[in-house]
Image (tube, rainbow, N blue to C red; front, side, top):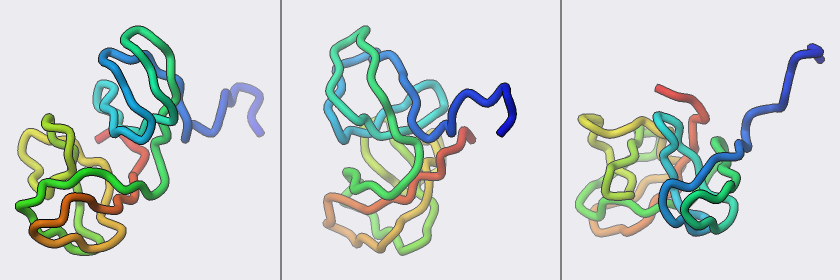
Length: 110
């Protein structure tokens, strides 16, 4: 391993800009992750930037397995790219009326 490597980078410590609950999707600049614990504003907490997580979904959308998914400002997963941030792809399909979706996070900044 290179002597200047700090960590793997999957889990990152960030500062809460709003109250955060464990399991909640969190945007940190252009980076998306899932909170690994609760945090109050100004507190440090860890996010996981990879893996598969069940997240709230826009119930009006029908998202197929493998489709790209985005994080909307409303705090839910959407298939709409415009004004939203790519966070990964649907691990499994979730149809119209379904409130949650399993997302494979891409762990990158787009």
